[in-house]
Length: 194
Image (cartoon, rainbow, N blue to C red; front, side, top):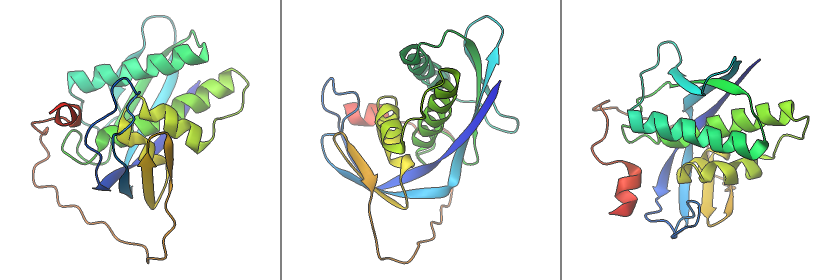
């Protein structure tokens, strides 16, 4: 069986810096983001026979750093355990923009993984698919800013609450110039610790 899903990245205009201790990635301050609908992560989940869950890049996608791959698979296994799923999976993902370069690839990656996994697990368990808000709250525990990728075009996140922000502005066009597609020197997690 195969499941596919995707989620957009988001860019914080008001960024949160720091997390409440032991909070499951709850920010210490509110944030406001703009959803980047054209910068997306695609995820595929496929049941495999036996063995451990494994990750591979989608064809044409760049590999992830070892630490990013480990976090991605561990979060998937956490979701799988919570759903009581015993099957093994191959996880495939890829972005249409550079990873680990400061464009919130972990936000779109964890949002896409959460949406795809929770949809697959609901189907396997013959249960209702969680709402976007429920998915956003779950996704946040893997990557804080991923909760904002569930709502557009603007999203506000504070504590447990995350929601689209109504706006009378005309739709904005986001223009991103990638000056260096290499891995950023300081990860977001490290920046929060600092």
